[in-house]
Length: 402
Image (cartoon, rainbow, N blue to C red):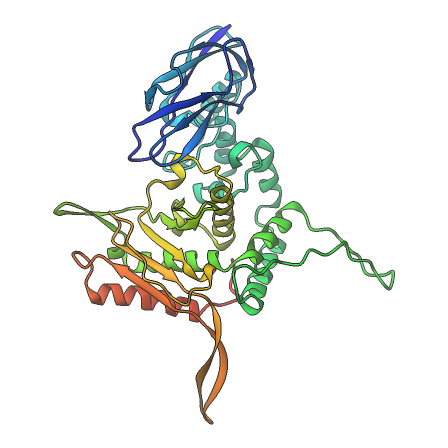
């Protein structure tokens, strides 16, 4: 038998401790891999701590209402094997793999030349998934864009193998482009639900009707639900053009943030507001952005966000149009220096200029409201940034590759 040390995972840049609120298991209970062992609370969100291994809970080191520091061992789980396994803090949330698989992954990784570096990823992956990704040359951005079916959206072995089978599929790309075109041309509000149709029937007996594969279904579902992924992609692109907006203020110092992490304000059912963060937003394509937006929004509404999901934001976007507001004045989420509010998209009369003369037409328009910290952002930068966002939206190419 081996003893596995279950540690309090790292939960964000500014979170150093958590309070034990409930033990879901007691000494002597059997625990499955990825099964929640206890519940914790921080000043940000409540969360569960899962086990990375299967085994038996043999010791509980903290009781309910005890305060635990990040990295401290909170429980001991007895597993098959012959040595004590100490888990690094940064790897606590990863999907566990048997010891033999971990050793194999390490050996293969050593032999791999110029393998992708996953240390910069804000997500957690099991050694087995990382090993497969390295062998297949899958980048961090690609891996982060895979839709995980494991607990809390984790990418499993089956997920990554399924992605490899459909990787590079031009049919999937074309499906994404078509979905984007449908969004831009037909959707006017963010609460329009896509129709769910039954399986079509061939009326002439000649046409072949093929059900979409899993990847195409996911892409279609994500791309027709909302405009928000388009907005987030455009904001990330504008932040790359104007890095002076992707900064933070610390007293008399300016911190230039390397990563573009977009906060996405989301309303909760109880009326409160929470801001989950899309990490490395500039590295995601539109499909990946759509999956991140919908995943975070769904988990925010159901109270399943993890502490790390709300940490590390460098710029925030809030969609006041969701509530029917034409525009609003957003408040900066300090220490960030800017926040963008998206108003409702509505049909309005507009002057159309043509070579034959001007005329009045009906067009869909929205207001962008930009608040920024005038201590470090002057009017030229703040105005140029929001103008660039507008330019990108107005020049949106529905036929581009996603």
